[in-house]
Image (cartoon, rainbow, N blue to C red):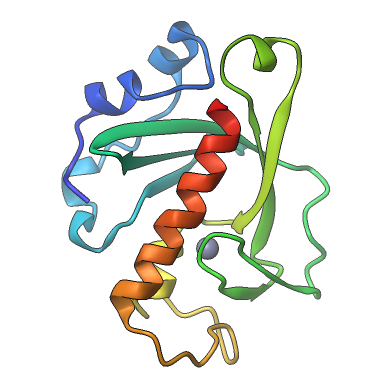
Length: 163
Ligand SMILES: [Zn+2]
């Protein structure tokens, strides 16, 4: 994806207030992020580890989501699969809940998805980060097809949040 600035990221949030988007924690090392290898940028708030964020370029526009990692995290020993990139982790998948955009969100409606807890789907898909033996399915499809699938899964999740 194309590199984004802090202002672009803050302006891209669709499911929190403008005030929250202004205050929330955006990584300070944006210039050093491996943008060429990212389908989306995801991060946890170092001050509040249950808060997670992601930003993706969908239909040519950056779209960012504020997420809460569920306290009832998937058990450490249990293996579970990220719904975006289909990587299987032992304890490295978290249920992330996004308040819905607009009125529905204000009324408490939210959408959840199981995601790589470190939000590094792009790196697992590319083999740049290792989730251990058996973490990735052996597939004959190309890397491009895998990243397209990750983006499609992410776009479907974003559509549920904004729809
Ligand atoms: Zn993932």
